[in-house]
Length: 387
Ligand SMILES: Cc1cc2nc3c(=O)[nH]c(=O)nc-3n(C[C@H](O)[C@H](O)[C@H](O)COP(=O)(O)OP(=O)(O)OC[C@H]3O[C@@H](n4cnc5c(N)ncnc54)[C@H](O)[C@@H]3O)c2cc1C
Image (cartoon, rainbow, N blue to C red; front, top):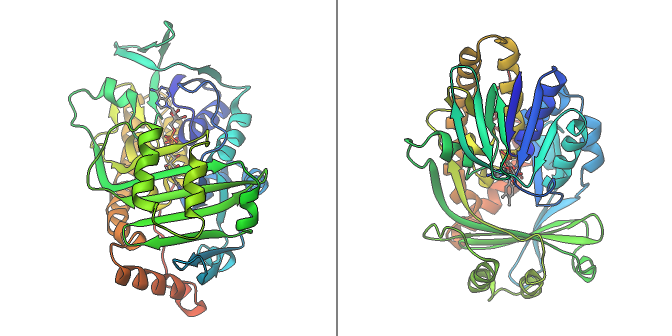
C-alpha cells in the first residue's frame, strides 16, 4: 500500500515505522526543513509506553530518559515549599514512565524509519483530490503524490483537516490557557538549579524550569488567558509573558530576559481537537490533528503513538478494505479519546488553580497522592490498544 503521511512528529513517525515494517511504501511530508530535535520535556506513560514495548523500543527510550530526581514546589521567595521524589511518582505508574525531550523521541523514531520511508522535508500539502482508485496530494514544492491513503499527522492546526473536511466546523476547543517553552543555553543557569524540576505557582500562572543535556536549562510557562489570539509573534509573546510573570521573584526575571535570545521559542494556546469524524474516504488522521487532549492531560505524545499503532493494526486487519480498516480504527479509539478529553477539561483547573486556596488544595492532594497507602487508588486513565 502507498501511504502519504503529512507531519513528521511523534504520530507520523510512529505510523511510518509501523507501516514500513509491514512492507508498505510510506512517504512523509514535513513542513520543517528537518526533524525537530528539541522542544520540551515529556512525561511519558500509559498506552504509549505499551506501544514502545510492543515495538521493541524500551532500550531506546531508556537511553534518552532524564533521571530527574524530584519535583520541587517553591514559595514566592524561591525557597522550597515541598518536594516529591520522581521515584514515588513512577511508583504510581508501576515504574512504566519515562521523561525525555520531545525532539529526542522524534530523533529515535526518525532513525528507525529514515531508510525505509521517503521524506519530503520543507513541503506542505496544497490540495487533496480523490478518485475511485487513489488520492492525489499536490505539495507546496510543486510536486504531486499519488497514494492509496493520506494520513494527517500534522498536529493541532492540521492542514490535511482543513483541505479534506471543508464542510466541518473548526474542531478546536480553546481551554483558556497559553503556554511558552524555550531552552536557555547559558550554563550559568545550571548553578541556579540542580537535578530537579522546579515549579512556582501563583493563581492562574505557573512557571517551571529543569536541566537538560548539554548544560542547558528548559523553561515551561503556563497561564490563564481569556481569549484565543491567533498567531502571536515572539516579541508580543515575550511582552505577554512579562505582563503575567514579570512581578515574580526567584529567578523568573532572568528566565524572561533569557527568552529574548532563545532560538527554539515555543508559544501557543492550550486547546483540544474534537473532530467528530476521523475519516473521509482515503483520508484519515492520527495524533493531535484528530485527538489532541491538550498538554494539561500530560498524555498527548503517548496517545499519538497509541493512535498510530492502532491505525496500523486496523490496516493490517483489513488489508483489502480501506473503508473497513478506517472505521475499525476510529471505533477502537475515538470513544476513549472523548472520555479522556472530558477528564482533561475537569483536571485543568486543578492543575492551574485560580486562587491561593486552590493552590493549597492542589499541593495537599499532590503530596498525599504518593503516600504508599493512597498510591493504590490513584488511577491514570489511558486508551486500550488492539490485541
Ligand atoms: C509545552 C508542552 C508540554 C507537553 N507535555 C507533554 C507531556 O508531558 N506528555 C505527553 O505525552 N504529551 C505532552 N505534550 C503533548 C505532545 O507534545 C503532543 O500531543 C504530541 O507531540 C503530538 O504529536 P503529533 O505528532 O500528533 O503532533 P505534532 O507534535 O504537532 O507534530 C506535527 C508535525 O506535523 C508537521 N506539520 C504541521 N503542519 C504541517 C503541514 N502543513 N505540512 C507538513 N507538515 C506539517 C509539524 O512540523 C510537526 O512535525 C506537551 C505539549 C506541549 C506543547
